[in-house]
Length: 562
Image (cartoon, rainbow, N blue to C red; front, top):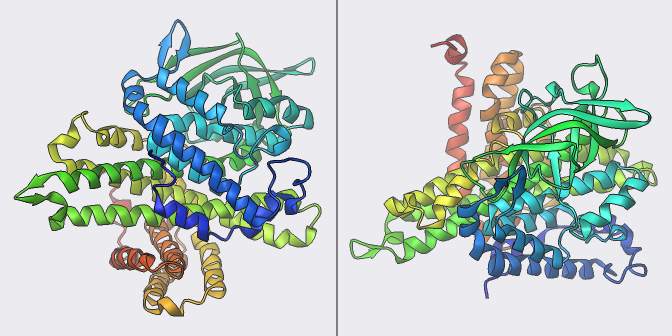
């Protein structure tokens, strides 16, 4: 039997070694639900056993049921027939299997029929599902919609919608982008008007993943005459005859996932939370989960591509030996493996930051003394989620690119899955915010010192003496980042900072990952090798970025129209 959880030693390592004590206690309200729900854990060990069992189910479904159908789903794709979206038969079967396994309310509280799992577990599950079929993740991974209703909806809205999500009776969509408002959500123009105490939506949304879903969260302009984010509110819309799917996109990849253009014609909707907070509060909160989900999707695709390439290289004979023994190929495969494991530790750390922030937000009224702690983890989440999406999705694109190279001409053919992985992964550094926008979101945490604050915490919390040589190199990376930040700040030139933002974030990501890999190396000897290989490449790359930053070359800025 193939289980995509059990066969991944690195995911198992992280589940066994992540410090989840605080997250679990907050999530489980200090295990106060153990007498109310039979599924609720009684203690920390019980919670971790539950997580292991749930991931085991996800892994079995992904390996045994979803993966064998993925190529057919890609070939058939979602179809648009007589004005309605039709999922591929394999997609419908996979949704049914996940629903029957009670996996559609992953992070929702038990009172609404959910599993009450933290985001770090959800990230693991999304990675596992995405390794099997990246397109299915765009349905399974949209459970974030229900969590937004849980976090910001009224008690009545929660009781009405959330149990339906948990039972798998409804699927969700996030209707944000428009023809003239892609990444710039402040330009959203779809109109929300109020009449007789009810809200109605008019306008078009485009590039909406799973826009055919039963329940959508729709960002709309509710304040006439108010431009920008302050004029936007968020609405719950349940599919009816007043919204027409105009088309689905003919895409490069993730064919099993329908991407819809939606026409709202005075469609009735419900306001979620307060007016005017649709973008600046609710959608921004939604973005943390969305960035993590896409990062996990990319990581799952990269894992699949690496395994395909490694297996092929081990069996493909050239010059009298497997091509895996050729140094050039072996180096590519090793770099893939190291990059995937480095990205995984980075992504799980980001998920933990979001879990801690979310947990503190829920208990802050009863624990006002933890206000500073909440403020700190809010800053960490604001840095880590865009930084991780930047790093992981770019990494996954390179892994899939190199995987095709390992296959040679065969990789360019549709006979092998790597061709599909290459197409599927390409969107991950585009949707839910392009890499360029993620860098823009992450740079504040670098320049303001948030990243250094977190690095200081790693140094205080851990004794790195058992890996002293490795950690000294990680600290050298930190010094490179410090020099780069000081230089950029001293320049006091906004355009110069913007020019070097990506280089600066790349260095910061390398530093954080190096620290995290050193922490992993304290727990497993094999991780010392991963840390050494990652840092050995990261140091000269960071020095190269620093050299260019210090050169003060601004020729590109001067010759924009060359």
